[in-house]
Amino acid sequence: MQHALELAKKSPPQPTNFRVGAILMRLEDGHISAEGYTLELSGNTHAEECCLLKLAEEHSTTEEDLSTAIQSPHVLYTTVEPCFKRLSGKLPCVERILRQKSWIKKVYVGVLEPETFVGKNPGRQLLEDAGVEVHYVPGFEEEILAVAAAGHTSS
Ligand SMILES: Nc1nc(=O)c(N)c(NC[C@H](O)[C@H](O)[C@H](O)COP(=O)(O)O)[nH]1
Ligand SMILES: [Zn+2]
Image 1 (tube, rainbow, N blue to C red):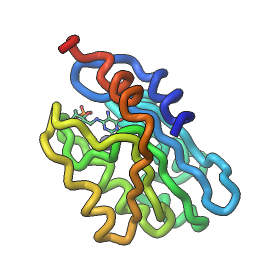
Image 2 (image 1 turned 45 degrees about the horizontal axis):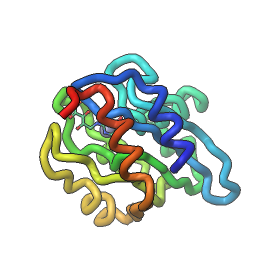
Image 3 (image 1 turned 90 degrees about the vertical axis):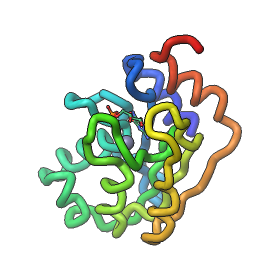
């Protein structure tokens, strides 16, 4: 989670989203298959989205078809829990993860999504219902939120 937080710090501060870092780690050996942070790739991307897009690129496939290219189970670390709704209307990360539930078996989150933009985030339940475990990693909340909201007007 510390590594994901370092990634989040690379994200350009914006008032309209959170700065998030994410890592896709292979379960069997801890190999980092992909990592990303908010807005790393063009197109108003989320950190989790960047991980999937970069991995798809690496396997010469699309994000949608990634589950045909990846077999070994992975865990996703993300400093802020995956979004279930986006003000931009782009596909939320919970949906993106559900498409990959054959190989993304667990999601570790550093904080639950603050209600700043879209209110309560029921994404965790959707993931658990689909068989993707969601684990909360305590101890990083304060720093994760400070980084995530760095682009917001100081409240
Ligand atoms: N888990 C997560 N990873 C991210 O990389 C990111 N930026 C958010 N942020 C959640 C927040 O709810 C959305 O950023 C707003 O709803 C605006 O939506 P867009 O980002 O413009 O699609 N959440
Ligand atoms: Zn998202």
